[in-house]
Length: 387
Image (cartoon, rainbow, N blue to C red; front, top):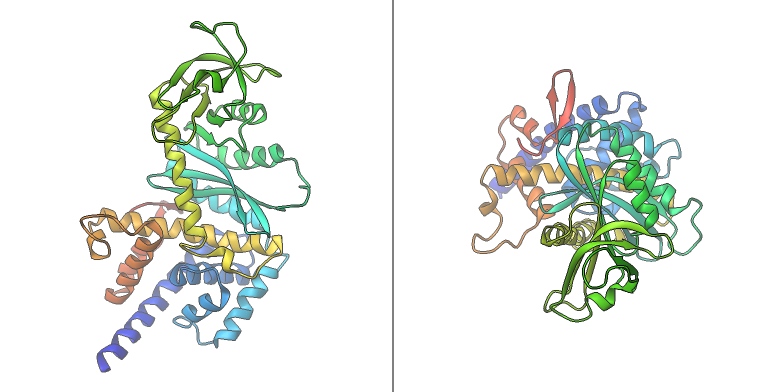
């Protein structure tokens, strides 16, 4: 019993030390934001990382490790933050992007555009940066699920791309999107941003091949890859109503239910198919947000503005947990938490387990500074994937 009490006391002391460092870091990241709001945002993110849940009662219970307040008081504080109309999500996230994205400046990058519903409450238009096995959130917009959107879809997407583009320097960027978002409007947005595109479109769409036996004929993609095992690669005009020249990679892999029809401004072939296959990782990322991870669907928050503020905290927590997981892997510590013969635990669980282990074992506050997602670079802070 005495050993358990000592370990609990050590964990709480280390958590408090890390909290002070994290709170100071967030104040430095957001110097123009009111100090109380900055501190509460840091408080929310710290609780999200520790709790692994978006339910405010669960977060409040975890924050007892660093707060002398009672659980209901902590929960009310977090609820007031989410309801505070003066917490402007876009300016805060824009400031954070200025610290996060320069880490990836001038590199070859892949972004994924997708939408995901939050049960029957809302729909999130989501732009993520593909890093290893996960999508890191770089932009989002909370929209009604059933009602008419106040803004046109492509205006929203254009705004998300514009917020990101200015921080990437001369990065070579590719945008991947599935059938629900693929269209001429998205191609035009990519061209305007000088990004490559790789889009999956429906096999019912038509194309006019520019070489081969079907040259000059408008045909449905279903005619070109109509059965399992068939492939077609080539240049073509797509979308008969508004013809656009693109490279087409159409494949129906054995064992798959249907064909993939991919269009891109880059040469067609198996390389495009492999690149698009990485988009499947979006499902793992969304599972981290939902039932398998932070369980955002389990919250009772329904108002879109409050959901937006919750996503602000959650997505900052995602960056932090990704940093922790990458550091765990880099330090060769994965086998402390996962089986060595197969990998059962993903980024969400691995990052949080690594943090809790460090909090149990740390002896000095200086060692905890390595847990933070941002590290000093000259006079400013910058994101890093590793310690």
